Length: 436
Image (tube, rainbow, N blue to C red; front, side, top):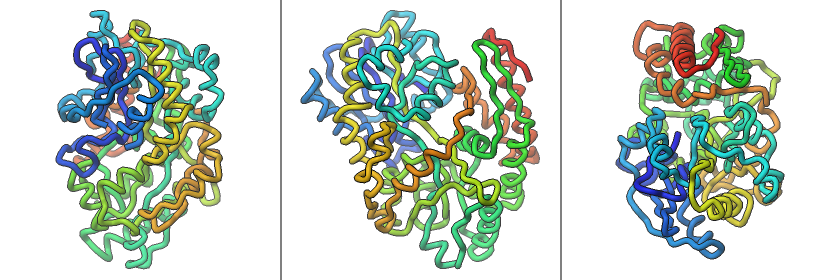
């Protein structure tokens, strides 16, 4: 995903969970499509909680920045970003590239950050696994820099679980049983909401041991027929077939209402979610808790990542010194603590391992030390996962392929096969040598 900027923006950042109308507002798009930009006159324009205007305001003391609040990007723009239909290629061609942007689609026109960030001392402060995942997306080059480490966990409504005497599932088989028990006890309640989401599906495949993507430069292999994929689809298909999933689109008012009133009882997602729950489902404060991800095999300890936030510096961008200064401040400097206060989950090793961070009690989670659970799970993420060089496009056609399994007689396995075919076709059109 990249930023849709206006004019000759010189510094731009697509940031996660950042203010504006906020979670639970009238927009049906998630907060992680909000943006921050710094224009030619170094004015921070923000519709920005974790990379918030607080960070920009604090940065103003260290950098030549001014802060100006503007409305969120329109829903249409956000959906275009999600589909990878961004304006950056046009800006590159016109010589108007921003100096800094979040970009998850490989453009070939962003700088390799590794040498410079080693020189600045930024890279050595980041969690190696967070960096390696990003490099895997870019063929081994550090073309974007993670500023959050999005470890996956399971958020669950303890009030609902206690009411119906349902145990917190430690395996996905137990999760399926919990879904059945919950819906039987209350036909209006569902274990979770899922109507097809590429990021969630790839995280589940990752944890299940599937490795559908192999990338070696311009040589790509795509194969969703491995045992890990079968493990995931075998369980999740039962949830679909038995109508145990709420078909509520994520990030909508209806979704937040379900999280607030208990009709949506769990959420498997990244460590960045607490701030969104606190702002979008305020009425459920004290009801929710966090647990490690259920396992595909009892006794295992395997997690995955979900979502991501990262920064890139286009080669043609202006104000390079300011861009690097902001990266250093926000990713490894004093800006990290400002982001942590707003609910961010750090990619910096020292903060991730610190007692102060892990012992933070969350009133929303009944005083639970949720950070400690995620920090411990960080060691359980396999580091051999790869994404496609054109993952943004692949994700954009997920609902046209795998998504059909949620609304028709198509199975998840058949949907993955269609997704594979569409991804192969696109890769070949873009000049990749694709094996399947």
